[in-house]
Image (cartoon, rainbow, N blue to C red):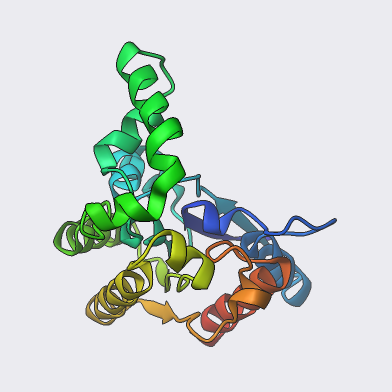
Length: 236
């Protein structure tokens, strides 16, 4: 039996279902079911390598060791919301907070964030000039390198998912994020055209229905995204 492999490269948007529902799945799991149901003579396996808070920096650090060696037929890239959204603290600050090892510096910064920054997020976002974690130039360069490394190791089909546009709740907390995500989606469209990748836009999805918390898909949201990916692969 032929084995058809699909690899998902992304952040928590590709993993979580919000709100949690019984028997809820992410789009990778729905996609695997769709393929195995519609093409019973082949075994389709979806390997979801996404992880929480993943950025293009993180993915590039593990790219050749953990991702491109999958030699998949299809790579789905779902990155950008972590990089594009405005933030109350710099990227290096957040990296220290997310270190596994404890240190005196992490303790100090964690206390600062918990007692000061976290209580006045939108204020500090504005004080920082509505800056995001990774600028557009660096984001484009590192995103293109992910595609370069995938192409260098295989002739896999590449699918690029758009960034979910922040809802009113997220925009109130992280002002300026909506416009930033629009700008980064323009970059993703440009990259997809340049690299001959399939670009799947989710701009038409409704936050209250398809990604309730302003970023992560609901169960129905994951189903719709899976259907769009299935169609894009099937038509190729």
